[in-house]
Image 1: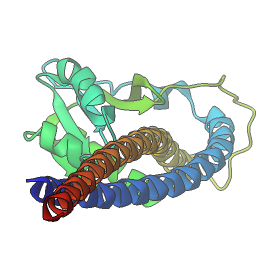
Image 2: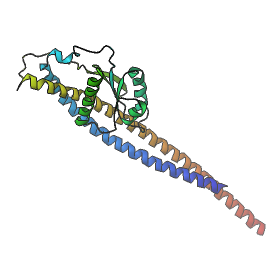
Image 3: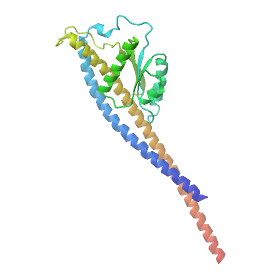
Image 4: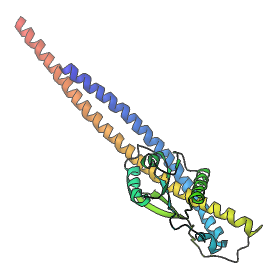
Length: 264
């Protein structure tokens, strides 16, 4: 009987050790991605400050909804929910926050967790590292939705740390005062549309980076907790294994001793 118990415990120790290797590896990967994304976010914030200054030349008309809008048009929500699994309660908490807000509206799902949570999403984007090209693809998809449905309001839902945010995208929000004295070259008709497009992409890219940083922080924390739990399980199982083994050895010594006395 002790041999069977020892065998079972040994199997559980082996399984816990393998699990610990996986969680530790995932923690290191998430830590690496976190450091990289923090650098990208810091660089983007510098770039975005320049973009904010640049769009001061745009007249107020560029920040207003279209003159003709459909009263029954649905609102569009871009939900950055991250990827499935291994990030604790990050995605579930964000998606539960988003559910009542996006009810009955059009959803652009970013990340596999969001796609699974909103199976009827209008447009879906798979998991991936944040990038300027990815933000451009999201903006283009949203613009196509707005043109086909008559929607003119677009909001983004994402996490910044542990805080869930709903931020407007279209109509774009002016953050600084209009500057009519700025020199625009080669011509306003050419510069303004391209500048507005880049500004929208910068806003989306910033939200995407904030969401990704938050997700990696949650993943590092979850994997660290899982690794420490695996350590505790291994320690407890090893102590149980040693105790049963010691008891078995002691019992064998007693049996041998009693047999020797009987022979005498």
